[in-house]
Length: 248
Length: 213
Image (cartoon, rainbow over all chains, first blue to last red; front, side, top):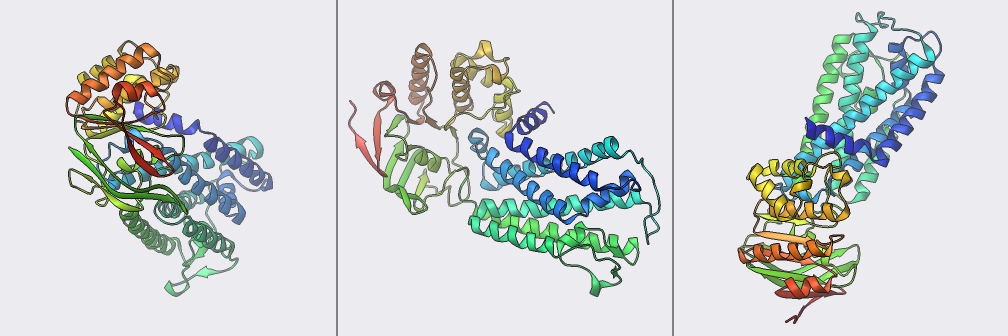
């Protein structure tokens, strides 16, 4: 526990981490400023995370966070030389990226909640969410977990590509994702009724969309996320065979 | 233990840092690597640690190509550039953290290594309170603590006071006598004079053997 704490303290004291949190704070401040008085804290969180620009910047910051983690860990020659294989090194690196991204994502939610409490003071109003027979709280928890897993998978894939391939591939990936984000706005009035109408673009799963019922959304999201986890694992396996360089 | 470098080249972009290097490192010897900044010494050390992959050629550890097998070299420890310890842990805790990766040593060996580098009295001080020389000594302690066969050191005595440098040089000579391969990149002529059995000079990607004695 002491070692984990010391590791985290080392990480959060880096300039890059402070910059990431600073940008997140400014973004949240702007978004909270846009929210009208009718929104409760829970609905406000959904509103903030559904903004395309906010989502795109969040994704970019988490990707930067992943690459910062790689750069920091790669300086740790004393640790790395004690790994027996590059696979062991990659496993440790993946754990670090996952933990550091979790910290950033959690802090992002906390910053939003804090700013909502300070600036909006609308209270936690637990209510039915439109079209579903569940509360807005249950849906928001589900939505944040889905967003968290998807962003983790995509940023891990980005990190693995950064680690194993030419940097141009990472840039191509980033451009593709930005196009995907820009092409997935909230589709007002669109209801996902069956398998033929489900989305393939990951950005559509980072937005709130109406499904025929919550059970169906849960089911589709489960299989979609499972597919991303499998893709991430495949990229991880390829990377463990392709790593050529550790550090600059 | 023997390390063989066969036709090793390394380039970054279009720039060759090392060109067609053939070297052998044998046990019971200290090798000194000399050359100006950017001459490729650190790149060679990183190739030996498998942090870099050669552009051409192969590196064999007792005949085994570990880099090709995506492994790190066996029984090898290094101190390259500045050590990367956690500032909020003590010197001892930092070594313990590293020792726990392979779990081949316990507290006694950690304390022994701290005594050997003259840092035992300071072992419970937080790392961020260490001087530059103390940090470097802790870096050397992590290299020797698990009794590795190969020790790779890049400017190991940076910032260390003269009296301690002499003590550390003696320590490395003792390790050599135990049959270790010790490879040191250094700018300090006295290190070469007092430690090195074999010296390699790096210049424009070419490595030549220098007569020291």
